[in-house]
Amino acid sequence: MSLAESLQQIRNFNLDAGPLLEACDKSRDLILQGSQSGIPEDARKCLAQMVAQIDKERAEYVRLFTSGMAELKTDLGRSCDTIAEQMVTRENQLLEIKKLQEKIEAIPIPLDDPEHNPFHPANLVASVPSMPTLPVAEPLPFHPGLDLVAKLMAISLPVVKKAGFPRVSGNIWENWNFDKR
Image (cartoon, rainbow, N blue to C red; front, side):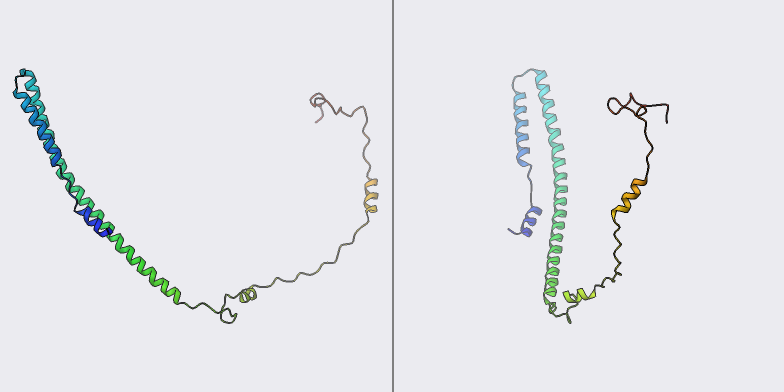
């Protein structure tokens, strides 16, 4: 079954409330028959109220069912129309895609010749600017390490008295001098 046939079946659906209403009527009739037999008056009044309520609910159901079915059919018809329009649009898009594919296939592939193909690797390499040449610097003279050793030996450090040198081990707070900041 095609999609168009399925949409037509959806449009033509019909829901019948007859079996439910028939069952409701049979139940009502059974209650009425039961109320005719020899039962107390208060039970008969109760059954009469039940029958009245069943009649009221049945009438409300019929009203809601008919209006709801009309609204449902309208909504389904709109939905089917939307789906049909989408199908037509999709078909048109597929035709357009097919035309574009044919145009693409008709475009000739450029030759592998640098003269006719601007995207040939030889043309791409030639289009990249070359890097400027940098002047070659002369090597720096290497100084012997003896000069450095002589300079380091010339530096004199102040002599630290042994008595004033703090203890290295233990808790650092024991040797903390708050006075000298």
